Length: 100
Ligand code: SF4
Image (cartoon, rainbow, N blue to C red):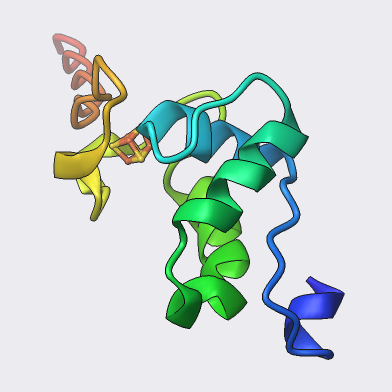
């Protein structure tokens, strides 16, 4: 992140969010963070390299969450290989009103 933002270096450090998102989506599946990083560095287009790390972190933090990915509102849902996609959450059942 520091290299990206402050020094404008096109690097992609793979943290827990990038590792999960890269494997779930099929973007860069690999068994270790280093292997994911090497795949991402090969496939991310040069013009996106500076910001890809940040975008993937934010996607993992707010949409493709570890426990329950929010697939129903995910903008890359149609390209993602993860199955089954998480459906729209059901509304909590209404409690029956007590009889008078
Ligand atoms: S569709 Fe679901 S699993 Fe795939 S990237 Fe989006 S939130 Fe993650």
